[in-house]
Length: 565
View 1 (cartoon, rainbow, N blue to C red):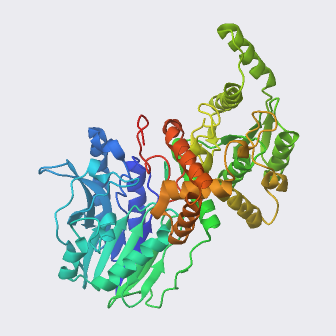
View 2: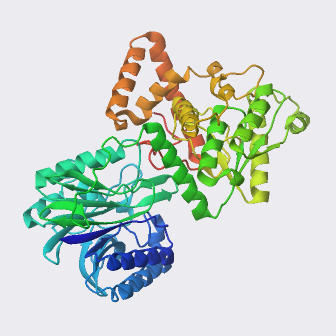
View 3: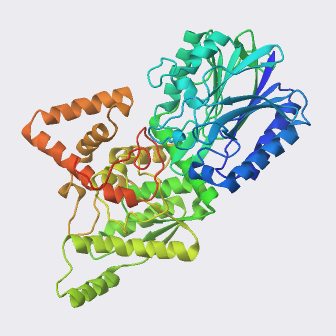
């Protein structure tokens, strides 16, 4: 029986010393447990994705030094084959680097495979730096078993629809006993189920057992969920590692089937996965934890308006970092309702966090007086509304600068889509937690937070009050926007369309089709589309947001600002 150690680690981009140290530690653990094969993830040595760090000579030199440390460590682990993702130089024509899989044994690279399919869609831009590897299969003998290799995207084209090359074709001809695929596959709603379906189909069609090892952790906008798995034609999905946390597991493989390391049957993984709200919570919590940790922040600050967006942001921040590391600031203005402060107090009491109060009435008056004195006309209407948001943003940034805390912005995807936000005001911050959640999803996740806690963390008054920016007398969101139940379906179909999960896509498509059937509905859809297009400049200047859905703003949706469309 082949004993395989699955090292589902959380590498940090650029931290070669830390990453190589974690790899060496896991190799040692694998050797102690008698593993024949230790499998790491795509670009595990440098972290995925290093971007233009790959163009820096010093970075590549550190990468090579890290690889040398891994090679040296492997000399003390005789017989163990470690499969590690790294960068290798391309001495031939084309881009100067390969995205490589290295099989290491006794201090020597005994097999080397280069990623053949380099994605340039969505959040990916591998072709920017890497040259595609040569066509053909790479197979290595490990004990009595022949092991073939893939790197991430190589395994996503078994039907041959997206690329001219299908790496499974060569593997099918080479007939290895097992295929090992190393991955850095970002997580979004439905992604785990899609991976299972695709690789289960590939396994059956090509008559090949496949071990899929995926990294975990948050990296800027992206979150990797781990959830490494094993699939064989006779078993289906036979094994799954933990989701949203590092994991180290040793499993067995013999005669085309996976088993526990002692030869007994593996526990069947959960076929249903997580409810969407719980998935979303875990994705955001891990994203914030790693973003803060990697950027050197221990505390965060949030402007608390008494509304649902800031309430959910605060609750998720507490979930991720603990109440002692979360600060809230309420900044009442002339137009703030009594509930904006009282609901903030109740929320922060429920969460156990510190709440500061910084009124802005006098500051807004001073700005308004100064404006009229300088330009000989009063500040009123929308400019006055935006001024209040910008004063609040300035206060929050001042607190962030003075205290060394990370400011979290609180915009949701519905508002960001149509520009219902103020540049240099409520868009200020270093990271957005709910920027990939539509407003209806904000409410759903807020209810889930309360249900999960078994008590009212987010007060009922916050969940039931009409949404309002409170920048003008009696203002409500519906003064400018359709009801969010309507707006969100229009936006889902316009922004994500067929990228939505099938049931969600069908619902949104039918909803928009019904609107387009009437003159008023068609005019509304056109107005929303114009708002989305007109506010691209705001999104370009907004902080990064944690990606939850298949198409998030940022690198996942790239459109020009100065254009007619």
